[in-house]
Every structure is written in structure tokens, then in C-alpha cells.
Length: 307
Length: 307
Image (cartoon, rainbow over all chains, first blue to last red; front, side, top):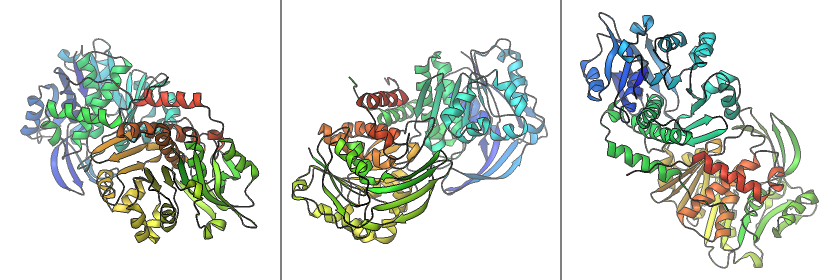
């Protein structure tokens, strides 16, 4: 099973109460690809960077075996740049700077060798670009997953509704689910979203975990309570990457396996926040990942026999 | 195993986006006692009301077999009264009116027949009164559980620290845990609180569930995602009542059984919020409760075999 990942590869400057990191490697596709590479070997990246992107960043992808044929490198241009500062509660942040740079004219081209991918992850991008990627596939992937954000609900509603029709799994956060449906109750919001196209919905609630919806089924996974959250950037993308990577790696789209995928996604996300950017996930071992999954099991499993 | 419950029995006027209920039966001890009565038959109440308290309210306690010998009824005085209005998100509320009335001079007297109770639930009251109840016990109960609030941290810190030394299980919400310890991280806060006396700590996070801490063990239970939350008043107290009621009913203080108690407490709380005040819990059947627990099992259980 091959997994095609589309999204941003960026440089981030991040300030948290614990310190500051300048121009480190970030972006949604970066976190997706690295997280999913723990579960699956055939990962293909479509994104764009400038020639200011550090070779060490490219090396990180190669080390994890990620196919970079679809990574456009624009000569003489600058990579997408984002700077933000987290508040003390780590749940809210201010954007200090956004420089679209290469992203402003990004035209995602899916290489011929990618067009038969079985799994497709459409990271948060302009909805018309997400649709453009989907339209380039030779065959409809077995699973199309998509992430989006409030901004596109405000500025590209019709395009968003159009691409949503073709999506199997949507991931949004709780605020986005509410904005998308004008429903405060997440249960009501989820029901509405599942009439817009997606058959599965993941609502990410940050430190309060994630909900997986499908028809009348509902699964909840907590975020692991951590002593310190060092840098939340990329946690949601790492979650999504772990989720779809696990599904691709296990070749099983049953709801029971999706539950496992939510747990593995949550486990990867719990590492992501321990250090700046991709630092922690880059050095993660399989044993550490298994131990973390065991912590999730211990955290939520209980034994009640109803007669 | 007998369970002694101390706390308020009140009249509440509640406004929510769904409607208004005037002078309905409420109070922490009311919700504790009713919730715990689903698991355990020997429940003894210590509280105070005025002679304005409706006979139908007294009847509710009697119907559930709750011992009222310790319920003081003050002739010519008025019951504790609280009025509040919930915001649209149901997570925050404004207090519109608080009339202490009989509570202003409440001197909790534990009847002789109550003084050998095995389980003691000290509801949110002035810490010196909570200590006074504890001091009247003939034998130290097998389990002392206590609830408190920010107000006592601001106004009665030393008394609060004194009573905490004698408590086995403390229940607080996340804000209160942070204020009690000046730690933002709930993990760090929990570690500090468990040096103050309690060996077990439950941190209630409202719609985001509850965490149970003991030594290095940690358990998390979500709140059940509901289509509508009608009235959150008493949810935390119902949770606590279900928790200690389940422990008393099963006579098992192992951590595994405390996990089950958290689930049963969460199940009762999920009913509490479906209607105003005690309305929903008063009409609850054992079968509905079992079905709700099954929903919790379905919500969080997953099956991962780590080799």
C-alpha cells in the first residue's frame, strides 16, 4: 500500500515559555510524512520549498525513506515561513509572521509514479489545490483523508464543499467542526459533516484527545497527560500522519482498526510535543513507541463485566 | 458498608439556553446521595434545610432509602438558595444570587448511629466544618473522600491544608488543582496534591472527562459526548457520589476497582446533565445505567496486542 502525502514543508520560528527555535523544519506534510513513516515504508511527498531550505531538512526525509520526487524546489525563491508564539497554557498561540513565499504560487503536480497511490492524505491547503491533487490520480485511492481549517471556511466555502464530497476521512479540530456546521454540540456537528461527504470524521481536541465518528459509532482517545508540553506545533499533523500511516501499514479499514490507528496517532503526537519541531519524532525508536502505546492502554483500559 | 454523606441540600434556580427551573431541589449532598444510592443501600445524610424545603424533596431521599436522621430542619428559617445562569457553551456560568440562609450557621452534628460509617464523603463546605465532621467519627472511616473549591483556597487556606491531611481521595476540577498547587501541568499538580495528604486524586475536567491519580498510576475516563447538555448543575457531585457509592457497594479499594468507580461515576453524571436538577437521576433505572456503561466501554475500549 502506498501513501501519498500533500501539504506544506516549511520553516518555522517558534517561541514557547520554554525557549525559542529559529527557522526549524516544519509544515503539515513534514509532520504527516515523518509520523506515518513509523508504520509504512512507501510514502510519497508532494510539496514545495525554496532553495533556502536546509539540506539537513531534506536529509531527514531521506533517512525515513520518504520519496521526494514530488517535492518541488524553486530556485531563487524562499520556503513558506511561519512564526508564532505560544501562551503559557500552550493551547493558544499568536501568529507573529506568515510569509507564503513559494506557497503563493504552489501548483501541486503529482508525478506519474505517484498516481496509483492507495492512500491519499490531503493536508491543509487551499481546497481547490486539494481537489487538483485528487483529480490527478489515475485511480480513486482506497482512502482519501483531508485536513482543513477555519480560513478556508471563511474564504473558499464552495471549493471546500466540493472537495469534501470526495473525502473519506476528514480531520478538523473542535472549533473548526463547529464553524463548519454552526452546531455547538460536537455530536450534532459530526452528524452534519458526515452528510457533506466524509464517511469518517476525526475531531481533534488538542490536550483533550480526539473523537472518531463513523455512522452511529463513536470512539474516543485521550491525549496522554504529560508533565511538560514543550512545543505543540505539528501535534495534530503528527496525529493524522500516524493515523493514516497505521491504516496503510496494516491494510485494514475496519472501525476496530481505525480505533487502533487513533491510538497510534495519539502516541506519535505525544512525542511530537516533547521537543521543538520534528526533533523528538526524528529520534523516536520503535521500542519507545510501543512503550507509549502501552501507556495509553494503561491510561484508559478498565474491566467491567456487564451481565 | 455504610456511607456517610455531608454537604449542602439546597434550592436552586437555574437558567440555561434551554429553559429555566425555579427553586428546584439541588445541593452537593443531594446529588451525592442520589447518585450513590444506585450502588449501595446504607446511605446516611448530614445536612441542613429550612422549613421552606418542599416535602416532595424529602420524599425523593426517602424513596431512594437514604437515612435522614442527620438532616437538620430549621424551623422558621430558609434553605440555602443558589441562582445561576449558564452560558451557551454550558461550561461557564454566572452566579445570579446566593442566599446562605441556614448554611450561615450550619453546625454539622453526626448522629450517634452514623459515627461508625465505613465511607465518608465530605462535600464542599468550609474546611473547618469538614474537619468537625471527621472528628465526630468513632472510628476512622476506611475511606474519606473530600471535595473543595477555589473559594476556600482564597479564604481558609490553613484549615484546608489541615483537613486535607486526613483525606484519602480528593476531588477537584482542573482549575482548582492548578490554584491549589500553582502548577499549570495537571501531572505536576497531582504530584504536589498527593504530598498534602490525599493518596488518591480525581481531577474533574467537565465535558473533557476525569483523571484518577494514585502513586505512579493514572487512569482517564472521558465524559460521554452528548447531543445536548441540558443542565450541568450537579454533574461533578453526581460523579463523586457514583464513584464512592460504587466503592462502598463493591467493598474493594483496589486501583482496578477505582477505575470502574470512575466509569460508573461518569455514567451517572452523564444522566444528571440530561434534565434539570435531580429530575433525570430520580427516574433512572438500573437497565439504563448498564446500557450507559456499555456506551462508555464502546467509546474507549480498543484492542492492541503489543508483542
